[in-house]
Image (tube, one colour):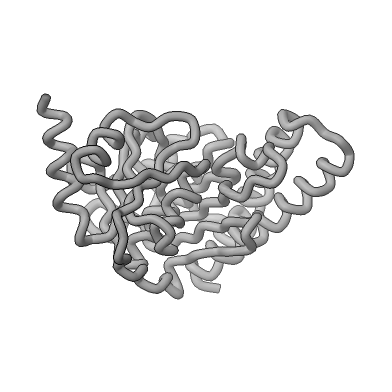
Length: 255
């Protein structure tokens, strides 16, 4: 099984386990907090156990696991978010949560890069992968749509939307928001103010495979398997929109 095939299967299988868990605990009347904790634990354990069995020589960086400094000298590192959007997972009927599986390889690019990934949207029975890559989303004849967090809109995102005349859409997890761009449901995902490497590694790799623009909001590359797991901002968008968005970001940050 290739790395991309493993990522896809692992994301899909983890998602199915989470859907089964969610349905069972809902029938039992479990509280949302119990559901969220159980989902995080089950998904992390299943992913780590599978990778230890199928890729025993690789390191793992998981949101739900302790960070092991050995990954900094490892040849290959799996960067995973076992349950992205835990709050949405705990809410009855919400579909905007995801499973992220990405592989970083030291030999890719200059100093290492993402080489395989998959993002599962289990409540939608959908998994998107780097192989085969998703179709390039069509350029839509509409006012561009920017997806932002359910809970708060970063000031820079609001400023960019105002300057460029974009409309807004709210969704939950980072994976769900990025896949909304990949699927062509929206055109822009601009985030600032707080994320970690596992929040974006798999979604960014899948977005790249679909031909989308991906970067930090200052236009610099997104770097993974860095010592500091904090990676607070990103931009994913249709390529023809990138220059205008980056210019609007500069206008906001230079005030």
